[in-house]
Length: 637
Image (cartoon, rainbow, N blue to C red):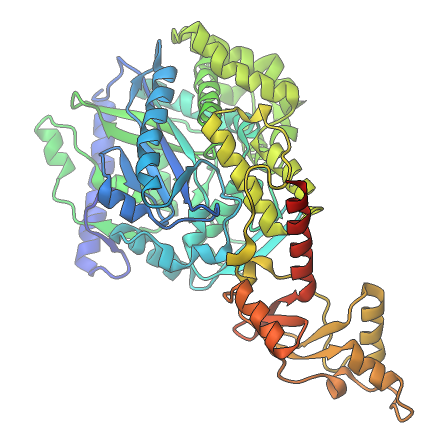
């Protein structure tokens, strides 16, 4: 969207927004005129990509240094992203032939290398990952938003339309239910977005193929199974992205409403214009901008217009396969399909393997099938996409001819040979085809991709240490493997401390506290509280109300005093013996501060409150376990 002045539709004057809408409608008319008049470039096909990434500090946690880096180093190919711990690299378009894929990889490595040197001067490192494992909820506070007008306008527009806090509810191995006060949750996602230029006369056919293959390509590339220490979907970005900016509200009536992040509703039938018209129809205009160009006048002058209004609105609707309009260096307009399903990482070579597979499959399937919509239903294509996001390489799909097939079998028997044929048809160098598709074949044969490696590693670590140390060590391992450019199918399950000497001294309470709580209410009888303590080997119970607000605490000592009293009253409640106004801490307290409080006040357990709500407990046992692990590690060195 550039750096033009972007404004909220809701805060603009009526005349300004009416002008923007007129410009938008003119852009649609201009687009249609260009399609009918064969304005579009059709004698060359190009590929390209955008690399999003995370910035991390020496502790493998988010580093909000993007603006400092850009102040020192600002080539045209480097740009901001939504959060201050993200950046994006844009790669040069390559003619889809010969050395194109290898040239893309070479350029990406070169630009990452240049950027990494600058980032190091700001105590930061680059990490390619779909969702940063070590990301914490408080890292997504609005204070971390990149200070750009268009980002602020977009966040305010989405928040205003929502009218309430955002709620995530994702179920995988674990379940995540969390509320957040801003759509900055979307900044959790980083991706590797691949572009394929297509001829306008082939756009319908190619876009439908892109939709059909999304499920299988996502299954092989899944790389984001963790969020806030919870094992969710194999590619949790899919659910997270939709829910993080979903402004729909529940209603009494069964009225269909579309999320702004969407796979779509049907196959494409006539042209790319259908998608633009549908997005204008279904989604309210939330951003406007000052536009000087009259697209119809530009057409009259025989000059391709930028269609800025159409692109602004297109930028507020997020299709997983997005149509893109652009103008080539020769002044001719062109059409692209942008694949947005690939998470960043696990390494550059893995990203290139994903890209080669998708690009080859797009070409190969177009050679094999004139009309994919006659071989499978749109509902099956969408269902395959959701299955792949949830189960990754373990998915089972409904494929052409209504056959049921698991992802690995489909890859080996049909899709990888088709992708090879497609790349060969584009005259991609045979050694490069082997380089990239060989990686995909090994993933299938070893039943291993980024998501499965992370899940296996995290499940192992959870039995040995805290969640924070597990996530930090996983992040450190990913970084180490990236620097060595080892494809993910070669990664072994690491040992704790193998890649990073964990330093918990800088931890916050929120990162270290226990959240699986056993609690009682004031009107519960004492015998009930005693039973909970006995069954769960506890000596301390928080007392909360129906809203989760802390009312007090009851200890084993106070219960035993009651039970041993000869004057004990039958049916006495917890409220009568609980301790009122216990010492508490906040989630943003440091571990060092908590240790001092415990030592000074002689307490062994502290409730953690946020806005009076009980969100966790931190106990002496947490520190004992941490100390034991550190001692064990030192004894092995």
